[in-house]
Amino acid sequence: MTSARDKALAIIPARGGSKRIPKKNSRLLFGIPLIAYTIRAAKESEEFSRIVVSTDDPEIKEIALREGVSVDDRPEHMSGDKVTKVQVVQDYLVRTGAREFDSVAALLPTCPFRTV
Image 1 (cartoon, one colour):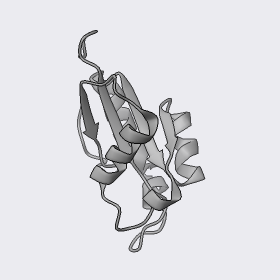
Image 2 (image 1 turned 180 degrees about the horizontal axis):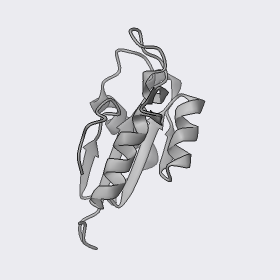
Image 3 (image 1 turned 90 degrees about the vertical axis):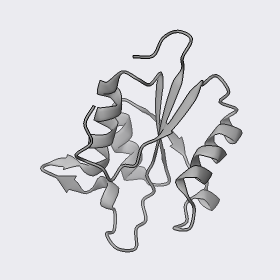
Image 4 (image 1 turned 135 degrees about the vertical axis):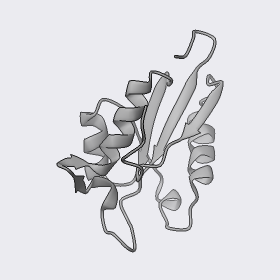
């Protein structure tokens, strides 16, 4: 669990486009959107003082808000299939001026069997 001194940020990069499985991050797995598994594990861990879904997709944004986490509307130039998760995290930190965090984790939304 994070302490008052340790502020941890979780960024879940989830773009809408996918070449192999269209809309994969919002597709249902056992009746739950794929990205919701990652959001729920991050919340249940109680390790993060802030959880942000970075997306360019309105459906993913809606899911994230429904799950009770923040959403970053990812700029168009950061939404291509060649953009890495490291670039997404760096862009978010620079663009938002988020300097209050001691640590940052990027959690991929395609890991539904992750445990807390």
